[in-house]
Length: 231
Image (cartoon, rainbow, N blue to C red; front, side, top):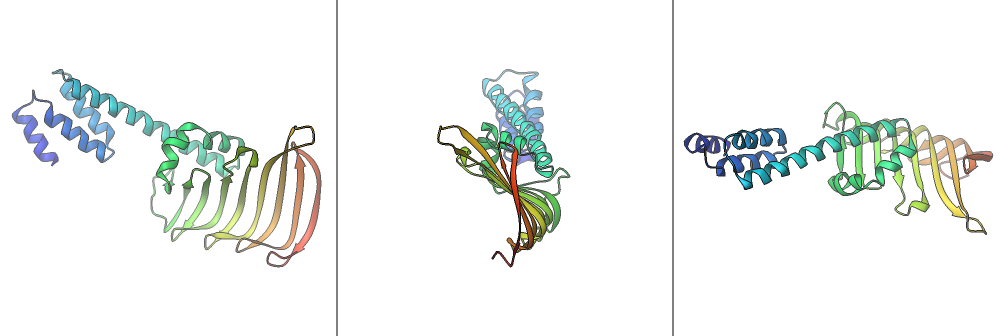
């Protein structure tokens, strides 16, 4: 099809139809820069409202693509250092909700590697559930962090960071859960629980420790022993 459009352009360079159709094909293939080049080439010599509108559409798609790459890189970095403030800011932003999340499940890697047989990157499962870390045979493997945001903002969020095997927490790791409650006077209180120790197939196992915080102030901790999830 691309060769046919090119031939039509040679025969009738003043007609915008082949230019527009070639640009539309490039857009379908997500080759937006090529689409823009084709349309700009035509509009340098001729006028066409259709071609101009298509160029405006292409420029907006390029802007969205650049913004998407910027946000995905920022989210990937924030996940790897457990920067929950940045993670929450991005995941509650309209661009993430309306443009990025609908692509889920979506895999992102700064290196551009899209093979999950053996990789390190980020997976967006849905608008509330994301993971960054190792993959093997399309499963979470190695070191990674999974962050889950509750749909109700006052319900907070949860993440597990540590070792993974066969798509589940397996090995040393920690969980952090943050939620909000209201006291008798209606004031909003942030509660945070941090749990660290060994996890076997997603269950606490062995010597564990929980730390309790209110509004970022430590309120206490407890050490305990668990056998495959049973205290």
